[in-house]
Image (tube, rainbow, N blue to C red):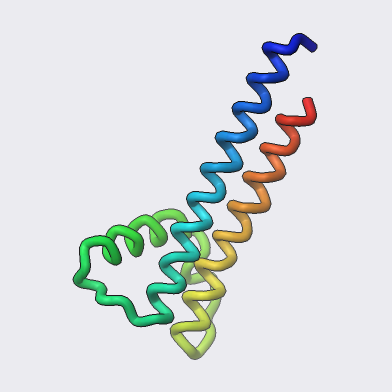
Length: 97
């Protein structure tokens, strides 16, 4: 394998890992804002909520705990963990080849 191809795989792996980290950060930030009862009329809070809702569209209502905070932590937290795990697994795989 040439050095150029290897460097490209490392760059792609790094980009994928960074994107996964940013996605997980947004989800984690929303969990924190929810738990701290952030002002939902604030534009930044609304942006984070909208982005987190979109990122966790497949998991945010997956659990049916009685407590709303538990549903938020489990649903959005699951999405964050999956994005981190899958993103870093793909990045590691690219960087090994």
